[in-house]
Image 1 (tube, rainbow over the protein chains, first blue to last red):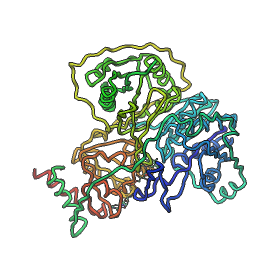
Image 2: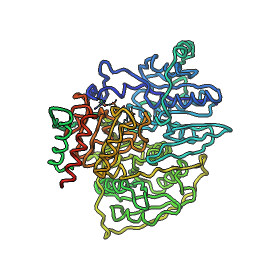
Image 3: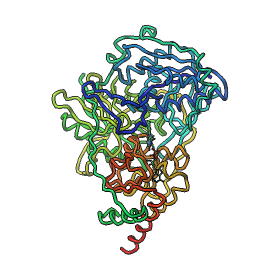
Image 4: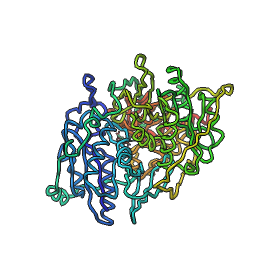
Length: 266
Length: 331
Ligand SMILES: Cc1cc2nc3c(=O)[nH]c(=O)nc-3n(C[C@H](O)[C@H](O)[C@H](O)COP(=O)(O)OP(=O)(O)OC[C@H]3O[C@@H](n4cnc5c(N)ncnc54)[C@H](O)[C@@H]3O)c2cc1C
């Protein structure tokens, strides 16, 4: 079972909202000091899904990551967790793109990698929250896609994928090769072990540029984007919070009930 | 040929137009009027429930239906192929879907198939005065920022729309319009549904509840939610939660509120031991009143709340519950 996992480096999405800044001149988010880059959390679940298949039946896991200023210790976490090889798509030509041009570049890299049974992506990246690239890669490669998975099993050229629904679950069987996007209901991704971290140092890391992929420049980065970002800004939230106090927490709780009754909310 | 018209993708629930469909019709009507174009709704199924005609009373000029055995249960490939065929026949200017389980699965594949741009999970839609382009506003970075996007040249301009972000129109049965079946041929699907299990909500459905009692990681255990359950029962409300409590297996994922959970907008949202991460607020910031109980005075939830108590919920909540009981008994 050979898998490819696409991962993205993002500014820590769990950083305190108060630290969030935007540069309105460039329409970009500026990571505050102390906000570290991390693997987008759902992508770690995607790696975990691939590792569980590998644990069960062997095979190879290749990691693909497209981005600028990738911190090697961040993207290498995938290798420390147990993946086998890492490919970095780094080129100014990939910059300024949208879901379309990003999926295009990743799909070319996947074609170059050659044979695979499953591609895994996180259900959405924690920066732009679009949830398009996974399905987009599948569409460009002409393979089926199953989204928001909580469990993945594979045998005999087919995968059985459990999907999370708003009020339940469903199981879908799909012909391989296929692409699966993974949600947190899969269960916690493993932590890299010390042994894993040591082993990762010896695993191959390859950098590909646009020219290595034989990409059509008109479809890459800004030129290939189908959408245009007009404006990026912080929403104005103006609420005033009335703190209800008491001599004791119990008294404060009781007074809150009275206050809500007074406001006709109870 | 120039593209024209707004099409919304309609969904049904419990034999009725789902609330997101009514909201899409409301939003679509405004865009159609601004552009001076028609608004149509499209429904897929097998058979297609005749109730889809009601889309006309809620704002549509036309209703298209695609009835095909492959569309009886939702699967990605036949549904994408059906909408693709409809777009090729009808050449719409704008196509809107709900940010629902089906919409978020289908929209990206369809956009890539049609070679067009897509804005996901939008909360605001508007026609730009000079360019006549659709400007779609979507929360990004978990809700810490808003992005205004356009799709300058490819068509249709596509967007998925967040639940409860748009107003439905009041039903007007005097409106008239046609229901038009489309015939399309669909490829065979490379995926098959093995089983689908739906959990029925025990009490009030989270999305419909007027009062929600939500607890987060600070509740500390599954048992800790018992007081929240009791309070919710007392107030005919529902219990909601954060992803942290779902990941800890204290609550089912169907209780999760937020960016990747449910979107709720109750009259009263009581957030207990919830820090107020932007991804959680994405699902509840439409609430009319938020009450926060948190032991950390600097917790972000107090920035979104109208009323707050700073303290240990283990002490605050039982006293709150008792007072609520007392108030309900004496009134
Ligand atoms: C892409 C993405 C999507 C996400 N989608 C969602 C989503 O849909 N929904 C969601 O909820 N999250 C989502 N998250 C996760 C989110 O970022 C937060 O991690 C999560 O909401 C935190 O949950 P919490 O508030 O329960 O926990 P914490 O942030 O740990 O907060 C616990 C709070 O409890 C308080 N507390 C502790 N003990 C007590 C006590 N005894 N009495 C009173 N207060 C106490 C603490 O002061 C703290 O404020 C998403 C994250 C990402 C990256």
